[in-house]
Image (tube, rainbow, N blue to C red; front, side):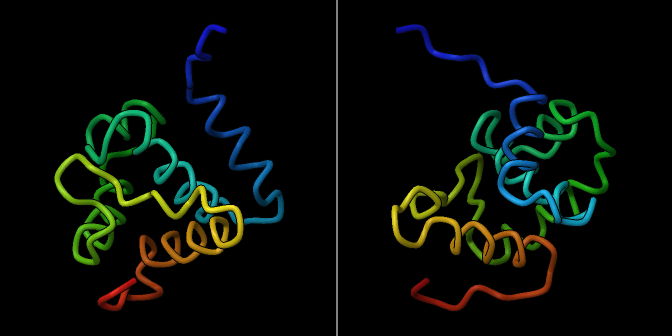
Length: 107
């Protein structure tokens, strides 16, 4: 079975599916997080992939790196796909990206 190519449109459709009531800023944060799985935790690559200003990626990147969710080009996303807690973890990581929460040690 061929592997589907993930595009900007694929990411944006998935973000819309996850929460159609989210604000534009919340949707952008979710798109940045999901895009980091495609192109790595690389600011320039994410900004280009999503066609958004680099400074909007950088702001979230600083929070994600300070909290250990992004380390180098890697993304700590293993729990995003957990059957029971995945969406909660993704939402919490989105809040961290937006600077609304800090990740505590052991999370």
